[in-house]
Image (cartoon, rainbow, N blue to C red; front, side):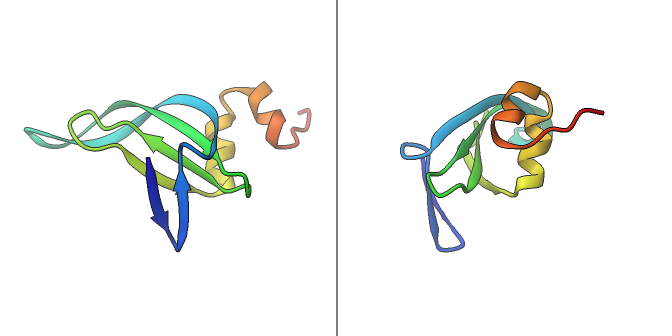
Length: 91
């Protein structure tokens, strides 16, 4: 999937898939907007930018640009993966 965000091209074919996870997200349904668990994938571009691809259940897939704080929040569930990209200090 490809999408232009703030004048930059985010492309799942050219970026590195870093992590797959479940996300509680709003989706469109026959009853309007509801929340449910969906599959998402975290990507990093060759220039170091982060984005996620969220699989749509009843709608199209969605590609969102992410900031570093959001990426840290996602990767906090997997300390080994977190340490691949960010410094982690012992408590």
